[in-house]
Image (cartoon, rainbow, N blue to C red):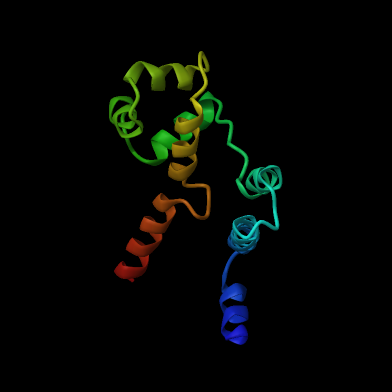
Length: 129
């Protein structure tokens, strides 16, 4: 079992390994909290350590992500659940995306190795070959 896990870890990228370690640490902390060995404050600290920082996307990055997904501003706004004017303001730098919108932009960012957009493109390329 340990050998299979080690082999799986070798195939994972550094970011995926870090995410797995953080998830394991968080699971252990939650279990310790359930049995009373860790208090609420410590668990909140653990939550803060295990959650990745929220990204900050300036206008040029919002535009890069939108154009990489090959969407118009109205379609991109609809996908994110915001008004078209919000996307236009983000791209001009007049306003910044809200926290939830920043997380969605992070998921859509094709430059992130774990991005669903990259995964779909990779699977399409592999199936075509």
